[in-house]
Image (cartoon, rainbow, N blue to C red; front, side, top):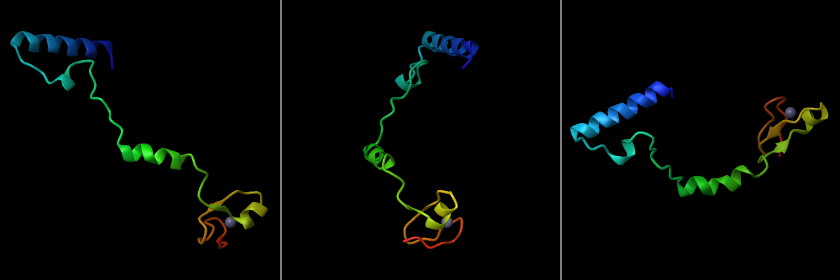
Length: 83
Ligand SMILES: [Zn+2]
């Protein structure tokens, strides 16, 4: 945000105060609505840190490429089934 925009916001706030118009606390310049992280999102963080759930395709690995395949699916690169 530019300095001018910030000044305009403050100026507008002063005008509103003079007019006696009350703003909601969340709308006051410089204030932000507190962000509450949902319980579910926090519970997912340990899952993100886990290794990639999959197996390396042996055919691609032999070619020097690391391709992760979900067990039971076929490799997206070469089509080799990976269990
Ligand atoms: Zn492969």
